[in-house]
Image (tube, rainbow, N blue to C red):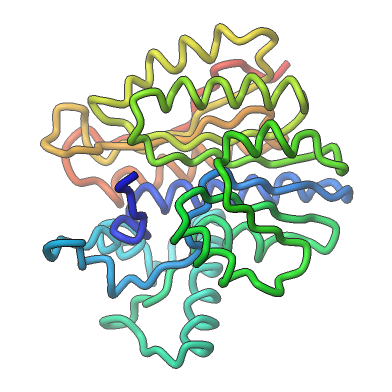
Length: 297
């Protein structure tokens, strides 16, 4: 596997994914009972944005200025983005203090949290986190990062296997983030299998699947396979296109499929995605919003 997320950290896809994740966590916390947060492809947890332009063999253009960089410091953010930016700010300040590192250029952050840190920082004492990463070096960095953090376990294992192994949890409630790199040709099949098995083990669990919108992604075929699942619960997609599908971009958008979403989460996420589309646009045809695949009854 060649994917390394630090090249892409804080890009437009991370903005949508991480703001949505925090909204889902908050939605589940509307109920007092605790839940398990399971991150299937956790990465290393946090990233140094000054390294984002350093490739393995050559320099590359950093992606965060066209993502987080476009909303950082704005005063007109929707509430979901306000919460996200504040969480990033806290992580950056805490990490800089601990490492003695300086700031990035201008007023922008230097350190950016991945989904493990964003979710874990938002959990209550009755909630817990299980973070899975199968790449050995990333898993080792993740374990070091979360050493000593209570009610948080790091497993060096395939996240799809974790769905089978750890559901249902004792809490009988879960938020499962499936966020694969989409390098494997059978990634969609793996996702569908994980959802089928996960829903069989925990029918009321909340599952969020991040996916790219590219010529290779074949998301329409994914939707067809998804809708063919037996007794598919209510679910929607929240998508962000930064340009139309004819743009000269390798990735022109992304989305999250949310199964068994927390009550009331669709409307604010729809407003957030619509707000983001013109702000993060990189070409004509930018758009955003929520679309229900299986409506709530």
